[in-house]
Image (cartoon, rainbow, N blue to C red; front, side):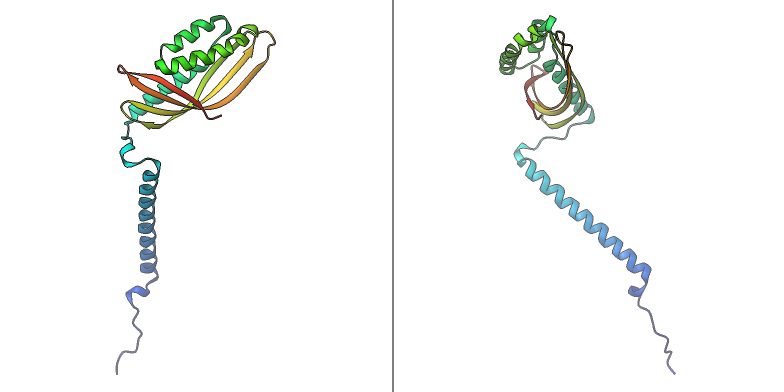
Amino acid sequence: MADETPQRSALASPWLTAVLLLAALVLGSLAALEAYDDRSRSTVAPAAARVPVLGEVARTRLQDQAARSAEDVLTYRHDTFDEDVESTSQRLTPEFATEYAAAMERVRADTMTDEIDQRATAVASGVVSASDARAEVLVFVNQETTSGTTGARRVERNRLVVQLERRGGAWTVAGVTSLG
């Protein structure tokens, strides 16, 4: 007489099924992440424009430089206005220095009349893109503006993209774009 006990297939084991299912999910997720990463890199910048990965120290230095630059560009006092503009202009590219001087000339009269002081404080920053010669850094800035004649005080939160260019071995500000 033959043994009539039903034989269970190894694939019918609930533990083995669970392990195989988990392995399939993990492999599928990894493949999807890799495909997404490849696709997102190719849509961000063409291959020729891809930026080398910066080391942590270089990234931190760029963020610090951009944060200080944003503060310099947006900070001035009514009683030292001309000195503030001149000091800041020395750390800008010649092209941006011209643009900056024109903008500051437009705010000069109100600054003097209303005794306006503006202080910018960078609260966070992150590198958007960088190469050996150029960088863009997103900087979050709080701008506090006070009027000496009215005592009014206003704080605005601003997001800026600071464009930096390396000239003569030093990073200079080539532009500042407000994102609001």
